[in-house]
Amino acid sequence: MSQWITEWIPQVMNQLGYGGISLLMFLENLFPPIPSELIMPLAGFAVAQGKLALFPAIVAGIVGTILGAYPWYYIGKLVSEERLEQLADRYGKWIGLDAKDIHKANVWFGRYGHQSVFLGRLVPGIRTMVSLPAGINAMGLISFTLYSLGGISLWVTFLANAGYKLGNNYDLVEQYLGPVSKIVLVSVAAIIVLSIVRKQLRRRA
Image 1 (cartoon, rainbow, N blue to C red):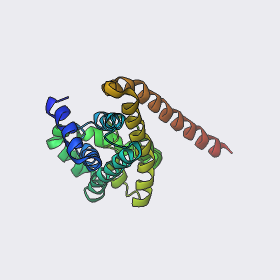
Image 2 (image 1 turned 135 degrees about the vertical axis):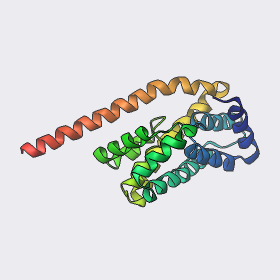
Image 3 (image 1 turned 90 degrees about the horizontal axis):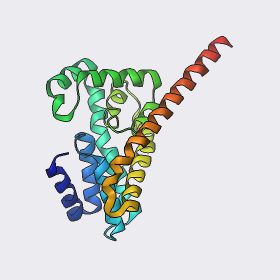
Image 4 (image 1 turned 30 degrees about the vertical axis):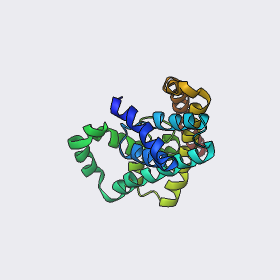
């Protein structure tokens, strides 16, 4: 992680408070290299120091994240998948994105629908991408918002509380995300298997 990011994030938060949390989480969704895994634990640490209150900090993080999800949603809605893949291959390296990522995300959404938006918000590296196929497949705005809010609320609350509990050791959050992410992925796989089994049973009935 670039040193300027690790120095810049606390400065913005200290100067703008809750508004800074929302701004940072908004930018994190537009530019994935800015990590929510650092922003929200830092907010939790600020709560532990008495500089902020926990509930407003969580709300600020949720607001910024959901606002940051809309630009990608509308890009997917207004630009064809083919054109997006072309742009990703040309410019996506700046945000760690390529055409294969977009295609895979769209195939995933096509198979598992709205639940992929909720679950995708809980998995690092997928949270931003999940907005694109939602837009490409014309998912309704209200449904997109509600499913996104569900996953976002869990993710932001987890990170903020982790930073609050760990105090000065908030940087350890990243070490715990690996196992948590694996649990989420296993849960997603289990849901997929169950849905496939149910469909097969319905066809046989």
